Amino acid sequence: MTKKKKNRRSLEPFVRPAFILALLITLPACSSVQESYLHPDYERVDRNSLKRVRIYAESPSGAPAAVADLMGRMAREYVNQKKNYLIVGIEPAPNPPAVPIVEEPLDGLIYLRPTRVTKDGDDVHMEIMAMLFRKSGEKVWYALARDTEAAKNEDLEKMTGVWVRRVGEAVRPYVAPLFVLYKDLFESLPSPVLTEGEEWEKIELESEW
Image (cartoon, rainbow, N blue to C red):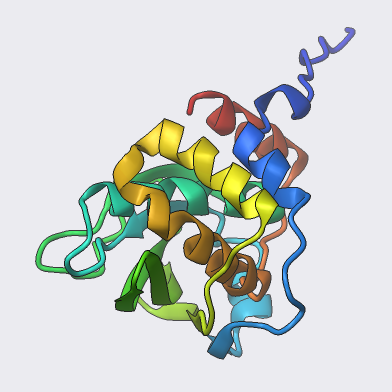
């Protein structure tokens, strides 16, 4: 009996324009990460099991509500393209902020917490902690990043325009510093190993955005 082959679809049609532009942006080599941690059991326990996650983003204090939406959506696109997580969705963090309970079919969650936001004229400076939790609520990974100077160049300005059109004018001063921090934060985020079936599940999830 001949097995019917699945209709394999290329990942390429689902890659977002904002992320394509992001890949072309050159940033200073100095990392903004101040500290990071990875659970010593990650390779043994989580590499092959912590795959399906939801992203939660806290709204920075005093910032427009749309900034939490920007944080979640930008993180989803960046993590989806650079790491092997199956991102089931994005949600604003509970109010008051708390790490949500993980329920089936999730294996864990990624939680984004702005720990400091300051303004200097038209510029916004941010400090963000990104965390990865197991279903049990145990923290597997975290990294804390802080921008030390205004992120400005022509490519970042173009990407800012893309996100402003998608999320709204209120997020304009937050896009560039957030992107710079995410590049550094998620560089240290460990990446799980997917089966072939899970690789295609990842594509299906992205196509639903």
